[in-house]
Image (cartoon, rainbow, N blue to C red; front, side, top):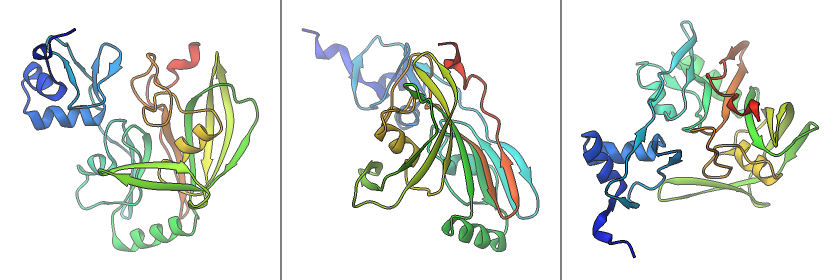
Length: 252
């Protein structure tokens, strides 16, 4: 049996190895950018051998896609929260959010008039949202998933599931590319429930690759392969290119 004296909490080991404060080390693990080999360190307080060697992924910077006097559209990189991605753009307010590991189009309002109109458009479902993702399994035909979703929060973490007592949720999927036992999908959502795409795809047996909460982890990718490709509202049409390596699974 291994001597527990030769083990320590992951965030403390990372702090010593990288010369960081304990709080900063814990933040990096919670962000999902700390790995041991090809395996993500998921629990900051989990114990690991004291000789564990960590690898920390670099986080990209949000890149402006479009800006005028009323709106700013940015391409959010994976591993940043929406608030963190918006932080450098002082005076602009988030209009919606993307999950931490989801990249792509993120909108910020630059004045109160546009903010109000945009918020009304979101409420009225007058927004067209397109995503790209890679899923486990072969999807050969377009499909519409209409299943209610219920979201609960525990210890500040949101978790959603298909539940007849939940809120209406509507997702349309279409296959774009098949590679081995995986499929790249084009996804359009008519509602914006928490983790909607991830939960709906899991519910039909095609979880998203790299999704540690609802999907399938893969040694071929270090992130959840979900990207907000396009967003239309109030006469605007914003598009964000998929990040480099997004089609890493295309080879098989």
